Structure formats: structure tokens, C-alpha cells
Image 1: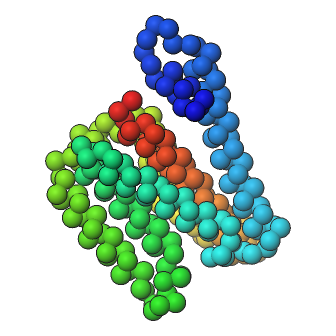
Image 2: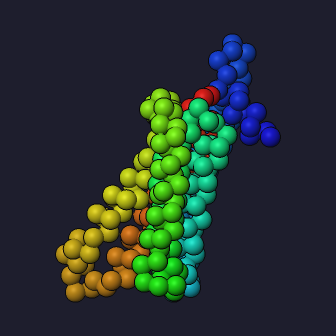
Image 3: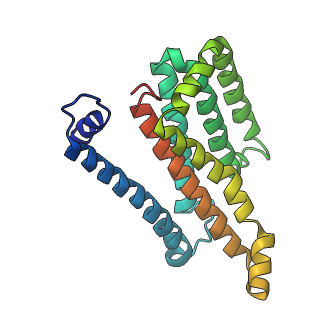
Length: 218
């Protein structure tokens, strides 16, 4: 509750706003973001060095991938339920993140049959598309409203880090050229999975704070 009041003070434009409270909120957020960066490195270190699991599908890193993207999807879905005036836009993002969650777990769906992940992904797409179509008038304006909020940056920067930068920077051709004879596939895996975890974590932070911020309302 104390952090909530700090947040409210930070977003209040009245003359009596406490500069100390605003500064304290900034320090708390800086601490949280620092903890995120340190936590990502520590998690990869535990998997790669202490547990030596090669960042497999059952590793802590992979499980956090799943947890963070699922939580991010649920944050937008919760927003779509709570804020009908923003439902179309929030349903788009919630559906996209749910699709990423399902795709991340394709190895487990393959126990049913190869490529089975496409079935729940298609179901999520149909449901999401139906909600978006029925609320298509609430797509554009809520998007720009969220775009103007500071936490939009976290969500979409994290998303780009996840789907673009991690793929490009984790390309084996780069590291084979740099490491030459010392290159092993495990090195590429650590780089790529670590960057993906960073992306997922930033998306999660931005999604959670966006929900708290009513996706740009305050």
C-alpha cells in the first residue's frame, strides 16, 4: 500500500505533491529494474554453471520464460475484462502473448502429437480475433493512449528484444566467427536464452505496471 501511495503521489499534479515521495518512487523503480537485470544474469548462471542443465526445456530460465509471458498475457486479458472501453486493443496484445506462451511450450504439446501446439494456438487466435472484431471500435484510441504512457515503452521494447534482437544477436554465424575453433552450440544457447529471459522479464514488468496504470489512464 505504501508503494501504491507513492505511485499516486507521483502522478498527482496538485501543488502539494511531495518531491520526496516522487524521488522515493523513482528510487524504488530503479531498484526493481536493477533487480531484474541482476536476476536475469543470476538465473542463467545458476542454470549454466551450477545446475549444468544446458538451459533445457526444464531449466529455471525456460520456466521463467513461460511464467512471465503467461502473466503478461493475463495482465492484458484482465485489462480487457476490466476496461471494456479498451477491450479491442488489449485483446490483441493478450492474444499475441498467449500465442507466444503456447509456442514456448511446444515441446510439451508434442507429447500429445508432433505439432499439437498449433491446436491451442488456433483456439486462442479464434477467441481473441472474435473479441477484437466485436470490439473493433476500441482498438485505435486505446492503443495511442497506452502508447503515450511510460510503461508502453517497457512492453514493446521488451517484445522487440525478445523477437528481434535475441534472434539476431544469438545467431550462430556471429559466434562461430568470433570464437572460431572454441565455438560450441551451448554458448549460443546461453546468449539467446539469456536475452530472451531479459525480454520476457521487461515485457512482464511493463505489462504489470500498465495494468496498474490502467493502460494510460493515469
